[in-house]
Amino acid sequence: MDQPANAVADLYREHHGWLQGWLRRKLGCKHQAADFAHDTFLKVLTRLERPTLREPRAYLVTIANGLVVNHWRRQEVERAYLETLALQPEALAPSEEERALLLEALCELDALLHRLNPKARRAFLLAQLDGLGYREIAAQLEVSERMVKKYMAQAMLHCLQAEIARP
Image (cartoon, rainbow, N blue to C red; front, top):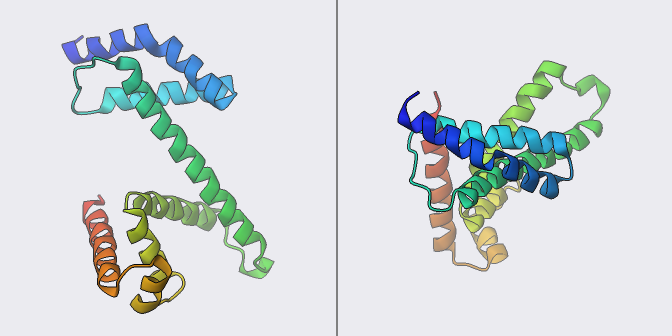
């Protein structure tokens, strides 16, 4: 076994039980805790850079917490999507495959938008979903139109960079 893999094995051996217990207390479910602990160490193992850890538990908690938050956000998006679908006439309901593809796209979009500055995200959504102009967005956000233009430029650049980075 190479040295980086040894370091991960040692990290796992020394902290897996503790991390799983921490997750079990946070989630209230031993099965989900086991899944997230596994995913945490998988993420550690697949990282290209392995930092020198002075506080390994803080490092593991940061990764695990990010995974849990992403899971909760995905559940929230899925719930909202299913509620919206329930309001549609059955004749317009998408197939199961279409539903899965749409949900995946929504979750990707949600993750992309959550990496934006909150005001830039809000400006982008007000423009895209509500069709508001820059003056109206500026009034809602209590900023100048010039700031709205900057927010929109940030959002557009962010989306463009994400599109370029896609495989």
